[in-house]
Length: 150
Image (cartoon, rainbow, N blue to C red; front, side, top):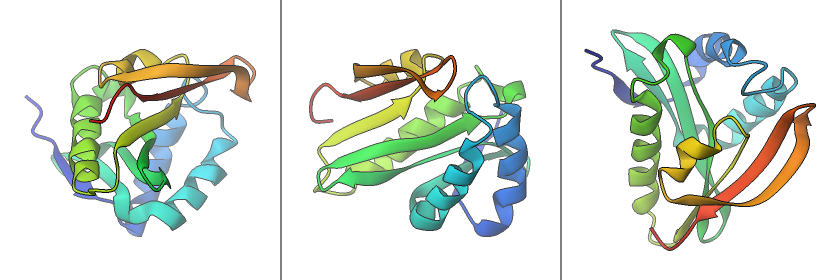
């Protein structure tokens, strides 16, 4: 049984994150996105979290305000050995709990791919825009948002 805990990101964990990120390339991310991700962490590290199990990092994810009333779930990924075990669900639920603490945020969105949009739909997000080959060839952008205030 997994006894994972969600903790706040710190910079010294970046090497562990990098190894998990590249285990998710090319299916979920384009290799070139690593630089975008590290820039994201410089701006939004206070709302980025890690899932750990027995002191081993097994996943991560976070959010940021994309507009004054909207939070965007961002850069969620799990170690392939732990996919399908509820860690992603726990991570997104944690982020949503954190988002709910901000009374100005009334909507949630995510930019994801064809490989993960069904996962986010379980949290009440609906696809409103698809752009083929956005991230790179055969890796499409799915923009999703909450159907109503959460």
